[in-house]
Image 1 (tube, rainbow, N blue to C red):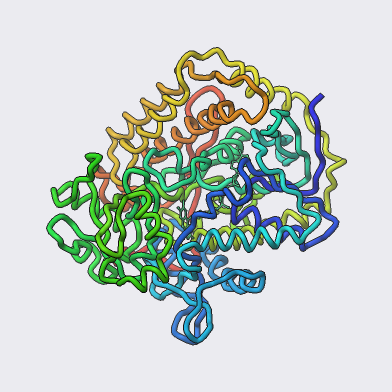
Image 2 (tube, rainbow, N blue to C red):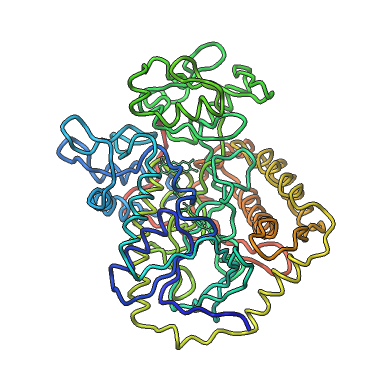
Length: 572
Ligand SMILES: Cc1cc2nc3c(=O)[nH]c(=O)nc-3n(C[C@H](O)[C@H](O)[C@H](O)COP(=O)(O)OP(=O)(O)OC[C@H]3O[C@@H](n4cnc5c(N)ncnc54)[C@H](O)[C@@H]3O)c2cc1C
């Protein structure tokens, strides 16, 4: 008999969104029992690696204003953002910044002692609130410390969630594997929040933690929930080679610029006002165009790249404000950015898409919410502005935590009748078909081929033929007999978990490619060489993908919410 644990709220994911949701729920009512499940230790969640900042309007008296943050977000999204969602973010995030300050967040300060903000791509005002160049680390530590003050939050670190328990339209819990002993456990609660982060490890060249795989997205997808706008993948202009580790946009915010092999600051030819601080899709496209025109550099590994020059910023500024990226440069590229430009190339960095939700993060299942990068309430549309994602995690962590708490106050976990058939079907899927699978193809080779295919076929520029070929390749990989686990121990079986992750990667990669193929236009981060223009007549709408047990995903469209701005041409 499988063990069952009863909680009032189950949060999957202990990144910024998960921790903020836990505090929000715990502070709502101290009698609610809250479980936070994470497949890694809390402080290993990808959020700790956020470097540059969290966007918010703090100084209306110095010229900034909320409307401008709303507009910049919508313009950055190439008008695919749901405008009510952008509005909610902008109105709520200033309070979150101050709240974090009260909880002990060591924000970098101006000389006058007030919280400092730096420039970031696509914004009309310096709005990225930062803590040196380690904003995510400090935010995570502040939230984790705060969580520990609440006795009603229990952490289940190194637990791997595998599926959502539900009846036809209501959430009931999750199935999990306790990694340390391999036990299969049901976690049951009236409400849940999925905060499993982004899935950027479906690409080889990626800034993400190795744990950033789509298991959370796939769980929702298999439970019949839609994945939305998955074709929109953000490529950050400055990943170092070969690791893909990020050099924050804060480096350009502080005055760094990009050069080509002629020593030219080429962004002046692409975004004459904002230059390197145009939005990320614009800068990444300019870089690939320069490379294709033969004005790139060759990295020793043979990869084409450009260079980011920070040398003119001087020793003091770099050591003071960009210490983390200096260390990264020295350790992972052998370059001290104080003395020489560093080689960079656009790198997979963020998924605008995710689990379809409404403005409040509610999903199509009663009792289930989503927050953070795993969610797609359509804040970022076709392109996210840097620093708006940590903001999103804080705002919707807080919102969904409170809504889930209210829901659980009404409905109790002991009245939930979980369907045993669902549990045994899931046990068969993971233990019979994966753990004891009979496949003979090496799953790690499949994973590498998958991520290389995504790098090759669904990068900054896309075409019908590259996407068709990518899709064909992914489906071929999917059909091979790779489901098996060599290591048959029960305790800490990372081999087993890696194969489970691969299973989700194959399904979600297919959705990304199919969405990109269907969207015959160029919008935000999705750039089609064969359909160069944005096509508002036919594609001013969100993509939805539903799982289909016996074949291709079922694709559909969903309207964009407009509350304030009609689509306009986008220039920087
Ligand atoms: C290198 C880097 C730098 C960035 N810099 C910035 C920045 O400066 N500003 C900004 O706004 N944004 C930045 N971003 C984006 C931003 O950091 C992320 O979007 C955000 O932190 C995601 O947080 P999250 O809470 O949604 O999920 P994550 O922090 O990714 O956490 C996901 C959680 O889900 C858990 N999980 C996943 N699957 C399972 C499973 N199957 N079972 C159990 N647990 C599971 C993981 O253990 C983890 O705890 C950056 C991203 C990267 C990669």
